[in-house]
Amino acid sequence: MQHTEIMPDKLSSYIEQFQKGNPLVFEKIYQAMSPKMFGVCLRYAADKEQAKDILQESFIKVYHQLKNFRHEGSFEGWVKKIVVNTALEYFRSKAKWKIETIEDNDEVYEIESEDDIVGYLSKQEILLMIQELPPSYRLVFNLYVFEGLKHKEIAEQLGIGEGTSKSNLADARRILQKKLSGVTK
Image (cartoon, helix red, strand yellow):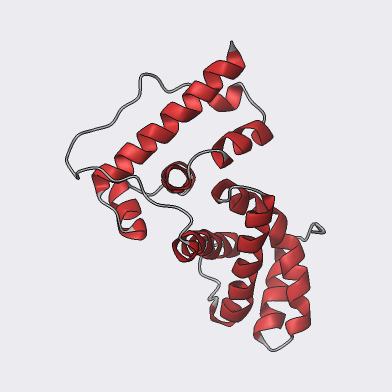
């Protein structure tokens, strides 16, 4: 993956050129967006190979849907939404994961303390810890923490109950805190 820094106005120009029928500029768009989107893929994937698969599938979709981009909001946000949805579809279609379900109820799942793990670890160490989470915990954790979805939205996206979403998030946090306590002691 070659990373080329492209100025926002140049990126807008490439998008417009693509939309007017010049598919050759898509490579420039890919070069500009793929490094950051690969980072998103890594959060959802168990390893780099899985992340590469998700990234490839995502940019195939971006290529086919780019003619519909209306320049409302950020292009990066639009691409990220495609990447996240592709990651979710990847896990649904591969059936290599299952959601740990519990009875849906109104119980609130809290953890003892909210340690700022970013202060203790590098981004790479945090990413590896997230990748080691069971797939269902990883999906819920990413959707809640990084995408800012509420448990109701996560439940709808994944076809689970809100209680299951809350439980999976709490379990993911507990696992991450346990790993963190092993690192920081």
